[in-house]
Amino acid sequence: LAKTTQPISMDSYEGQEVNITCSHNNIATNDYITWYQQFPSQGPRFIIQGYKTKVTNEVASLFIPADRKSSTLSLPRVSLSDTAVYYCLVGVDTGRRALTFGSGTRLQVQP
Amino acid sequence: NAGVTQNPKFQVLKTGQSMTLQCAQDMNHNSMYWYRQDPGMGLRLIYYSASEGTTDKGEVPNGYNVSRLNKREFSLRLESAAPSQTSVYFCATRRGTETNTEAFFGQGTRLTVV
Image 1 (cartoon, each protein chain N blue to C red):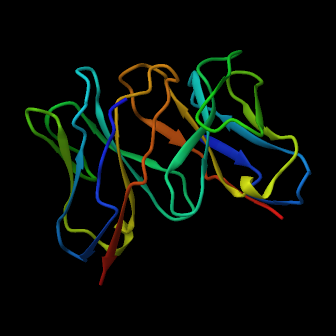
Image 2 (image 1 turned 90 degrees about the vertical axis):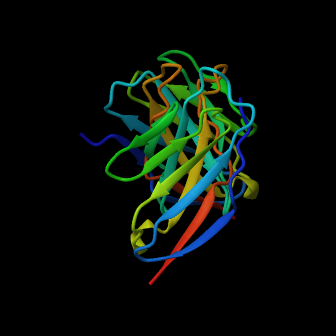
């Protein structure tokens, strides 16, 4: 399973665009890249998944370069309600068919 | 359509007591999981069930047992609670294919062992 590295924390202000980058140098050919969001006292929530290039949905965009060794989650015009922990995951533990979560990036949005 | 439902939401146990955490899903997913999350940490896999009738250990199974009662329900049991098991427990489900990485989580059970 590919190991991921992402910043421990980030600060931003309302209205700004936030980009969180995740490194995954050992990503396998079949691995998808997935981001989850977790608010305090709640379970994680799936945000976006991608394999290559760019994926966009109503919540975020995911940019993946050609070598796929990193990915960037982009949150446009954040608000206070985007304060959360964001997890980058790569692939599925095929033995356990489970998702492995690291420590995530704690995003704090200030007014 | 409730998704993933966990009970109870909160529980305080004394050291040595036992309890069962309940999880039920109405999404018709094959795979179900139990994770624990300690303060400021990521989630760690305790046990998982790839399909009805099967269960397997995750990263941190010691002190826990599980039962996949049917496709909908996956329970986690603490036979003799210890303070080190104070944590938030999350149940999750996933359709279970190799490329599908969208999991659905319950609201969690906040457990304190004193």
